[in-house]
Length: 86
Image 1: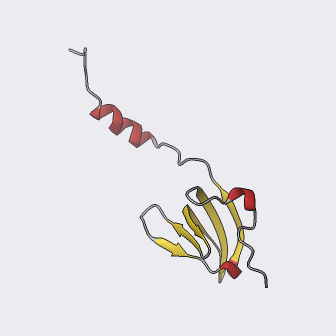
Image 2: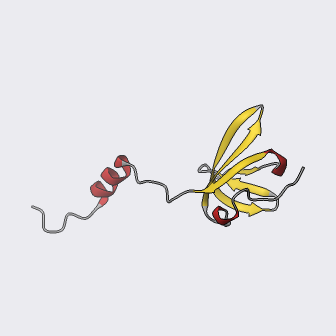
Image 3: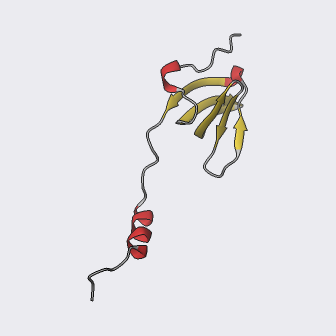
């Protein structure tokens, strides 16, 4: 079995947010920053580095930036200085 990584080469630059689908009893996705291609390793949002067996990778693709959540916007607005407000 070949271990050519990534399955879609244009999508996988290290440092990019990526989704990697792998076979692990069933299909599972690992979403996070692609840290290394050889061996394939993804850093998840909680900082854990997940090494992935290259033979188990089914698909890999680049993702756009993480969306900003409404709660993050509300917290930002609360911390913003209130210059000019009375």
